[in-house]
Length: 461
Image (cartoon, rainbow, N blue to C red):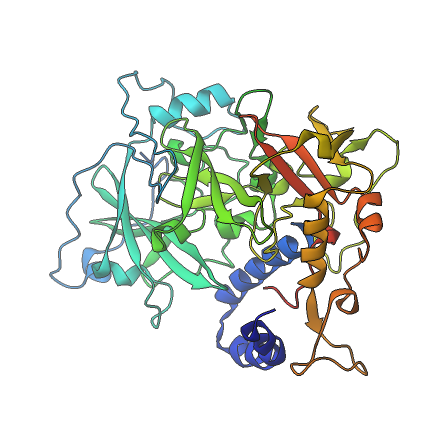
């Protein structure tokens, strides 16, 4: 543990208490959602058609008396923003005819139609490389906010803007807006599916003079329910869209717009969206942490929930010995004990798997099957170098505030088993099948871990 972390443990309660009163109800809801997502991570592992009439605003009301609305930008056809990628996707212009049919939403849309519309939207949006728009500060939710606003595209005479804010170390999108001569509108329900969530009215407060638009939508922000990566390795989006945290991350996280050091590997690119993995260095040697998600045409990254990847639901794995293995009851209603998390350390950073840099087949034995038929492997009897390194790292890096009556270190913290880490021996770790491996679509080996085997970290959020 670093001195900084120890200092944080000692000061966390005072700092949180001092900061909380400054948040209004709207921002507090977002903070709570973000905190809950990190608790889940800690214990388990983030062309429109205006088919209705939107209330008009006077030009003077929004832009100021005598000021003109922004000129439409010269569009760039559907590029995907991929900071420092390993594989850079090409722009996807298309000469295919636009799919026919009325420009209306539907309760259910088959994936073939969704994918066809991604490349040839009926709804008229044209995305561009996100560009800072410092003249559009009117779109910020709070007067004291200095977070960047980005111009991300056009639809006819409307310009499309994205606003951001930073909270708990992550950049979020606070709103997506269309602005034209009639004023500004929050695009609250961007999907063409009527069953997909809208931006939460609790989490997104309307700036002065902005109206909430629930009619306008984009074909290119409508996600397919399933994406096949080959070798029967299929990733879905249904758990993510159905997650209670999705309304607060509806437009994806804005981290790629703010930090050009992020690396994303594109796995599939159906039109202007891309299924990708975010790559991070792992704390356990020999592993690389991967987060599966969607790179959107806005330049943002929507992290997929664990239930949308093979093996993401640990309790759903069918073990060959017939023993059901699950995590303990959650601490509160927002923790999910059943999901898989990456074993490569950094439990406060949302990750999906850890990829082995060099897989040794003799160190693993078949032991179970995921619901979608992927064979699952666990370390051989007695363990292997990877299982021992993973367990030791998570025990050594467990730390929390000392309980009342218990003597902690100079910062008031306790560590390892004293912090509540449950797997204090390699034998217990192996008996619980705490670490498992499955093969990815390109032959790579992906490691997952049951959520209660993660290091204990005091209020990771």
